[in-house]
Amino acid sequence: VSHELRTPLMLILAPLEELLSGAKTSSAELRADLELMLRNAQRLLRHINTLLDLSRLDAKHEFLRLEDVDVLELIGSLVESGKPLAAQRHLLLALAAEAPVPPFPVDRDKLEKIVLNLLSNAIRFTDGTEARPGAITVRCGVHGDRFVCSVEDTGIGIDPEDQPHLFER
Image (cartoon, rainbow, N blue to C red):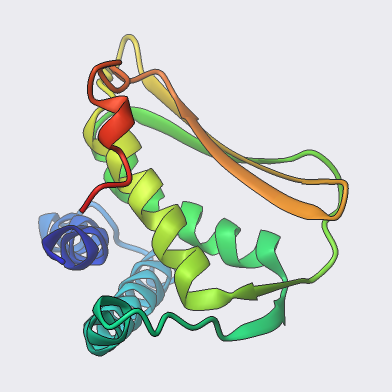
């Protein structure tokens, strides 16, 4: 739960710190950062609301709320939200779409949660400097009848002995 709440909070705090430092002076830059913070505050609220869903998961009553979603637009907005934090850590963050992706039936909240967790981990465990920035690429595409999204980074990776435990609570 702390991971779910920490990520959008960090994506709100990074542009706030930038605004308070006075680095942004034009009204367009200020508006862009304020819109970014609003989107992440709304995301944080959705995560808090999701806590209620955890009781359903624990009771084995998992459910999906499928809707046709422009997944590239959704994931693109998540990548944009992560760029200020990535920039602070000297990381290049990019979205790469293999081809046009039609709207896909997905659970918007769950897809958002998955991608944000992957992005958060990539940002946290990828080092960069001004001279040698790290890189994070979110790749999206369609393979057969499935939408596929992956996050690739130049970080330290997951220790092979920990990999079998990735999906344990």
